[in-house]
Length: 264
Image (cartoon, rainbow, N blue to C red; front, side, top):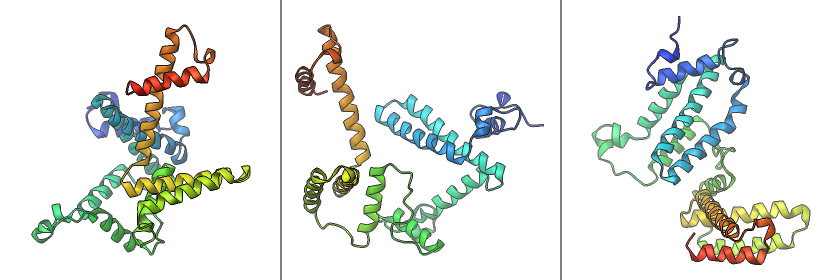
């Protein structure tokens, strides 16, 4: 008879695995968890990864601890479902990543010759490329997850193409491309606006790649700045006894500029 997770050590991964197994046990488990599958849980996995990034950005180590726990749960969740269908187990997941980390770090875990070798900047990517080549002959752009955020995936696709020489020689060329895409977007008919907007975003991602900027982090920063400044507008309007819907663009724009002046 298996042990009740309530009576197990809460600091052990085995306890979390036991909880997940209990939640997925037919009849006695959680009805919601029993209905889930890989596809329905995938969005939560992506969301939890973003929440980890948000916690890091906030600087709260307590929040980071909690969000890392939520992200760990996602690995346990997927592994439990795989175990149920006989695909693999959580132990298989751990074994695979342990083997991969050792394989990709011979300069740390290898013999003396490997340990004394100078670590090239592209060492990790080179090892990944060799592993992919060992599996099968893939197209240049294979291996970039479709589920990645659009801007992140654009940068990764561009980076792969750049490695075989398909790249602008200078960021100035990309600036020119952006100007071209803006013009095309402005002139595009309504049924082509979405396509041209995507081309413009793709060009912007290319600038980010050339300059070493994480476009997702940049956009998150812009979102946070917008929130701060709009909160300032609402606060100042409240001091005047108003709500935003009772104001106008001129007044709110003035308060927006005030927020900029204050460094918000």
